[in-house]
Length: 112
Length: 115
Image (cartoon, rainbow over all chains, first blue to last red):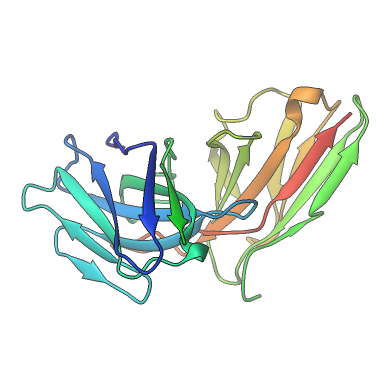
């Protein structure tokens, strides 16, 4: 799996958009970008994934650059409950053996 | 079930004892994964199952660790002769492997404390 680079921590004001960057400059053409988050004392939670098009769901938006070397997860209106560690992962889909490798992630602190 | 269920949620044991951790995946999910997370650390991959078989056991930290899955459903992670360094949260995840996406759903974890 391609390596990803994320800032170790970020702060965001409650109600504002949280923009979490991820660099994956060695991504292959068949690798998807996945985002998970882990709230304290809970198991990781899937947020969103994409291949090359921007994606949006009820939780977040995923913006992938045209060259696919980086992406940004956007939480449009961050709440205190969004405080968590956010993991950006790239992997080939469709194969159970391509297990997720979690790096250090970004610790997002949403402040009142 | 609606989600991945793990038991026990908390386990305190004495050094040298054996422990069994159970994972009940989402019904119909063919792939099952075990990870562990030590305090303040990231997730460490241990083993995965495709059906009842485990093609890759290289992530198991020692031969004291073993896992099995029966009926393509429930999985048990067994740690023999536990050591203090085995203390961690053990997380299980399952997924429905399909082309185009392989989203893992995690359980809440089993917190193991070895005294």
